[in-house]
Length: 327
Image (cartoon, rainbow, N blue to C red; front, side, top):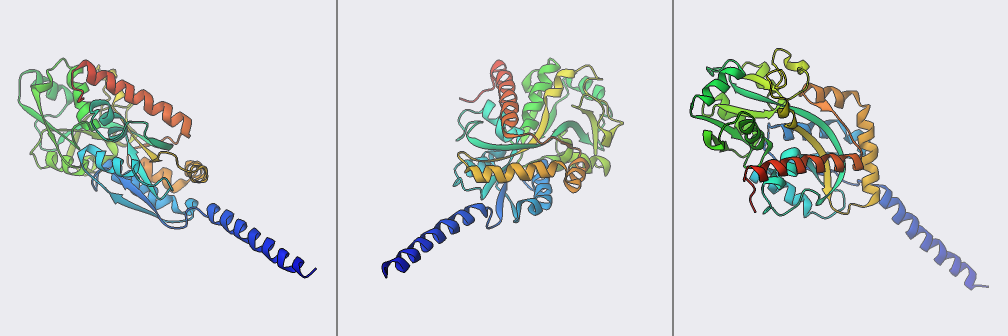
């Protein structure tokens, strides 16, 4: 009979271990989550990441640390997350450029478009075709006329394969212009690409509205057209490409999403599913997102993956047709 207390003690100890392990698993995250922005400070990706880091911690139950891992049009940061331990502590602020456009144009990068866990889409962001406020081109027609007359123009981007680059490729194709008719000047991040236009070093920047809205409203840049179906409320005086006779340009639409490495645990996915659903109703997140010129567009995992697949295949068709694919 003396063995019964010992047996009971062992059972209690074993149960305690099980309960502790279960509790520990349910505590994700037990430390701040690193959110990798694959583009430089000041660009659309950085702003979207910092909007998330400012509004989601209350729903998440811990902090979010934004880290800019830049280079190769978002490939450096995306690769870092793709190869990170799938424990939920290294996530990616996914962008259309790094996750759909670049994989479509460059097959040599270390990841494919679907080499991630898709946690959800966050927002969509129309593109605005911009020039310096001091540019002689006051309207899209002015710019189109100059380009077709053989004027040597240049455009900037956050890197080869970034949507700023691919968007201009699509625009030149739409206008019936040779891809070499304008010089492409890639930078390491949207912030630097935009600064080059403001400084008069480059003529054109086709960028997410969220990345240039401050410069447009501040008088440093002039927007000539936007890729929304209807005029953007934040710059309602700017015509849409549809109005200008180029509705095909609406395919150039930026977006942000939240990705993780492949095979994230179910509890991590479940936690973030709840966080994103909470953000849908969060007044601060919605206000900040709209203030950047973006459209709140939270999607679940299944819909997000289907959406990204369509984007990737669209860009793949364009780059292959124009012979721009890097294999």
